[in-house]
Structure formats: structure tokens, C-alpha cells
Amino acid sequence: MNEASKDPLSSILRSKREVTRLQILVEIAEHQPAVRQQEIADKLGVTPQAVSEYIRELVDEEMAAAQGRGRYSVTRTGIEWILNHAEALEAYARHIRRDIIQQVSTWTAIAAEDLVEGEQVGLYMQHGWLYASKKPRSAMGTVVMDARAGEDVGVTRLSGLIDHTEGVVHVCKVPRILRGGSRKVRKDRLLEVIDGVGVVAAVGLEGYVALQQAGRTPDMFFGAREGVIEAAFHGIDCAILVVDEEFTDFLKRLEGVGLSYVLHDLIAP
Image (cartoon, rainbow, N blue to C red; front, side):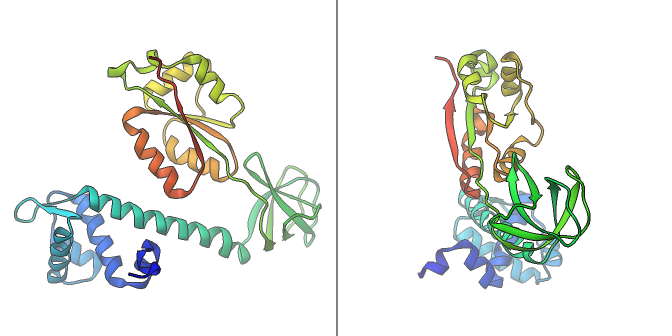
């Protein structure tokens, strides 16, 4: 097996068969245990016989499990396979958006000073926001309209790379209520962790209450996982309190998107 074949992105882009396998496994995960092969066939534009053969292969490879006639479920191996390919595709899409499309699209920035249409500007990140100024930077572009300082402005014909450092995510483990909840969180350590970060978030009411008791209302609660990831990609250091049973899955998510993180155990003995 060569290196390209080990790469989930390479295999999924080079083989229609792998794409179909991924789609079918996702369909099984979405509709398990009652899987209607005819509906999958209609959705993917293949024959029911082909769907049946793909499912048989997935069962043989232990990525899916048969539970009786027309009843299937995705195994842990199958879930890991889906996640590996989904993360590879996500990284590829991010590369397209950030490194390719930026050459032909119009970006929106905040004018750091008064700017005039057609003026060459430098682009830079500050506190998670994209700014445009007259000072030369590693990334340059052309202003498409007049703008006063503080206004949004369109910038096109980008060249170079925006000087940018991704933020660090500080991940704090918090026990579920049956294991003590917010009562077992060391508030002194919590205050040390959140001091100086740009975004504070919580996953689970236990973490939300712990932050409230420490005198800090979280910036994010609903959708906190993806919100923290997006903020970190924009260069903001973040702290997120995660209940212990979801802790490992969130770390895998961070590793999948390539973000740096620091672990903090706030649980008092």
C-alpha cells in the first residue's frame, strides 16, 4: 500500500467507489437500525443491488453490523472511518476557501483608517478580525470602495499570505452532576485558566454553573464546541469547560482539525 492510498483524502477523491462507500455508511448511521436500501439507491443514483453489495462489504470489513433482515448499525470502526474521511474533506475544503478562493474572491475587512477605492492595502488579523490598512503587510489587496476608519470594506486581488497565528484552546474537564458537578470544580484553578483568554465557553450545565459561580458568564454555550474551534482558527485563545463524558470526543475533534490545546483538570479531590 503506497502513501497516497493511506491518505483518506487521496482515496476519497480518487475513487468513486470510496465516495459511495462513505455515503452509504453515513446513510446507515443516519437511519440505523432500519435501513431502506431502495431509498439509499434512489438517493445515490445506484442500483439496490449495488447498495446491497456495498453493505455486505462494509459488514465483512466490520465497519457495519447486521442485526437481522434490513437492520444494520455502524460499528466503532465504521464511525472512526467516517470521521477520518470527514475531517480530511473538511481540511481540504478549508484549504480551498483560505488558500485558493481568496485569489479570486472579494474579502471583507475592517478599515483601520480611511481608504480610497483602488488603493493598495495590507491585510492583517487582530483580536480575531481581519483589518485593512495602508501599511504594507505579508498579504496585500486592492480596495473596491471608499471606506472610513471602522467601516467594513471589500478587498480583492489578494496576494501573499495573511500573517496569522491560530489560538490555543484550553480544555477543562468538569464532572457530571452524578460525580459532583460544579461543586467539585476548583474555582481558584478555573479563574487562573480563564484569565487572559479571549473566549470562554461551556459544554454542559455543570460547566456553565461553575463559570457563573466563579463570576464569569460564558461567551458561548449553545454550539460551544464549534464556536470555540472557529474562534481559535481566527487567532483567539479560548477556554472551554467540558463535562467528563464528552471530554475525549472533543479532544479528538481538536486533533482532527489540527488545533493546539492544553488540558486542565479542575476536579477537586
